[in-house]
Length: 416
Ligand SMILES: *Cc1c(COP(=O)(O)O)cnc(C)c1O
Image 1 (spheres, rainbow, N blue to C red):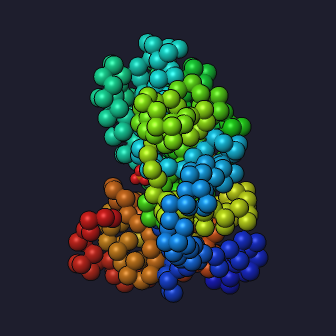
Image 2 (cartoon, rainbow, N blue to C red):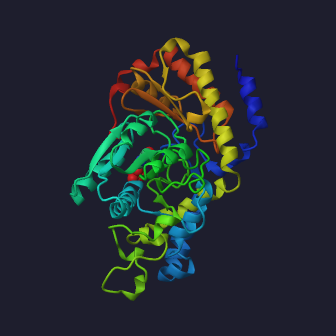
Image 3 (cartoon, rainbow, N blue to C red):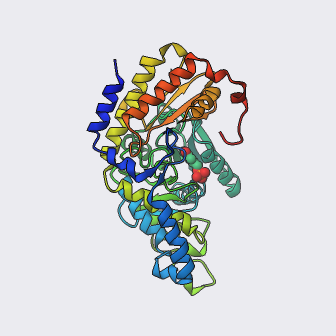
């Protein structure tokens, strides 16, 4: 039996508890949606003011050099790199995850086409965040060279699909719905055994699980900075390329920011010799700058410590729902095995949408994903054990008192 006192004790013992003070969260809210939009680092407000007032207002165009706006994509890329096992100079921040997938997919397919022209299959997962499939479909249609997409259910299908002429495999490191976590090293080995290349979508894993892109011999990676990394709504995304591929090709959005000598204003494109070739055009400097506030909090600790706390918190969540809410019909769809679990916990329930609305009304913010999935994101930097206790108590109260039956909760908002 887990008690409230026990949860409070775990909070006292928690080595990371002081990091909660680095964030602003509304009073009385348990925020379990940091895997969708991370909380705001306290420093971001003063930093935004500095950028707008000083860098933009006073220093004006000098800031491209003086504040190194020009170097921001790689400078912040190197900070993110420390969380994902990248070496300096391998990561950039730019554009969105969706756009970055288009870039790395183009590069991976081009690299493969030179070596293995008959390989025409791009593999993705059926249950992936759909933007990945949309981009692959759009890319296949655009290049019109006989490529096709093969959708798999998960790791178990990989061996079978790899027997066909696979060029590239696109996988979500942590599944956005179930929280299933792939073993990056093992999967890369399987994919490379057939000479295919891998692109990892890190949206639900960067800042949540420890990983090492180089040691696991990954090929390409992309991911959001506004989720676990707390970069702010729509903050530009990360893009990583294994150094062995960087100079093999560039990408078709060959804009001037990726040019070898952008300020020569040369008539023809020549890619930069570095990861900067994955840049396209002028970046949203204010939004990008703010990512640093979140990253600097991560760099005060380690992904190993964050991961350890994340597993304790998700274990607690699962145990408490089992203890307190067993009779209410929640079906856990997140793996119990630590090896297979990311940093969110999901349940299926026929009234999932209404239950989430009722929880939000009680100050517990989780989210709902079709079909029938209640999703609870666990962010170890600003969540404690007692927060999890409170969240499950509120869930229990909503179920006991049928609060979710309020008709207004049936009305779907534009953004769920
Ligand atoms: C959030 C998310 C995206 C969204 O990318 P944007 O381009 O930022 O809208 C892509 N893939 C996964 C797995 C995600 O979770």
